[in-house]
Image 1: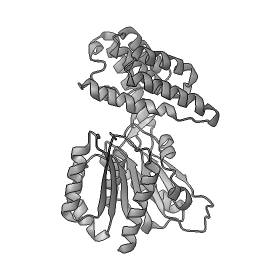
Image 2 (image 1 turned 90 degrees about the vertical axis):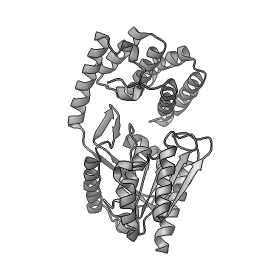
Image 3 (image 1 turned 60 degrees about the vertical axis):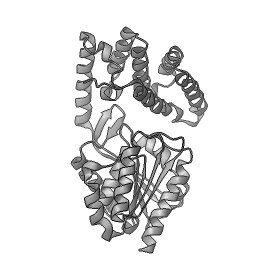
Image 4 (image 1 turned 90 degrees about the horizontal axis):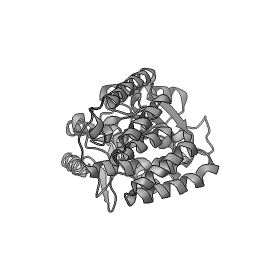
Length: 345
């Protein structure tokens, strides 16, 4: 299904997606990727789509490990520049390599070709690939041990949840702050629910809670954990999940650090946050003044204040739905805030 949206939303999504090219899997590739990312950023900022298309075509050969993102961005830029044949060709090429896409995230980008027979076949093939991948998908757990790790010693735990469309691989690049690297076992939990070839989300909340609880039990069996010091964290939908798992006490924890989360209305936040007051939990929420989720975040802040739930709510200037440049420092501040509150209680 192709949903309608405006160009501004499309443009925001594109800007959020292309930053993935900044990350290198190997140190020797780092400069090439950063240089590429800067060039692509310039082209998109200036809405120079012919140049963006040129760069992305180069990326097909230069960065084969980014095939999903490259073909997806190319298809959208071809559609926006009314190069519909090339748009469908690149999507078919992706499918031939086993790559599939989240067409709902594209809004009305493909609306002009949505009724064409060739595009309908592309959608059908995409659904086939999606169903096959989803059947094979399982929740994933990856644990990073702190510096000078000693199996005989107990460690506090931080669990990081992937955002919608994200995965463990990229999450590990974010959650490596000073406190975490020195003091914490960090567990990266990835949902089994897929959004595209390399992306996962937590849309089915019942399934999400079960997977997280099961993986936590595996953690407790395999590691020497201070269960009364566990902190939950995440970005975007991962932040929303951290809030839900924390407040509903799906697993033992002392609070959450959430970056640009949605207000979890369907999770009955007010009811369960009020019930959680006896556990002396706390929260630390960071967002941007231009985040499209800000109205709901303000409402969440109001609700938590109303019931007396200890938390800090930061709105950063000149930031949209994304991460601040000082993300790691703010993550450490959030961890300290949660720990200080737990010590006081």
